[in-house]
Image (cartoon, rainbow, N blue to C red; front, side, top):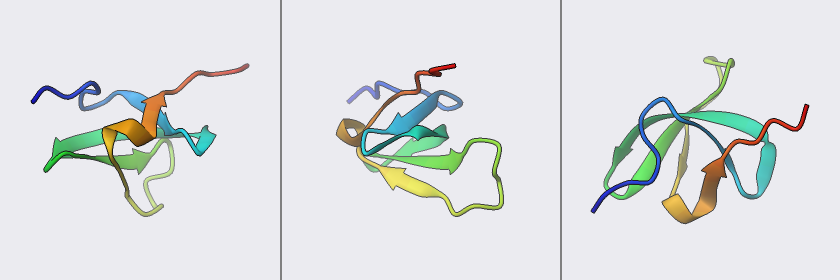
Length: 58
């Protein structure tokens, strides 16, 4: 099984597209993501169908 997102990719959750996440690792069919530029926040975990590439709207 190949993963769509690679470690280091900037993504967002489809339910919260304004919050950017950085993919840390893909393991056991889920993506472990850190909140981009906020290392103190808790890690977030998503299935591939729940995230997409982050689109900066600026």
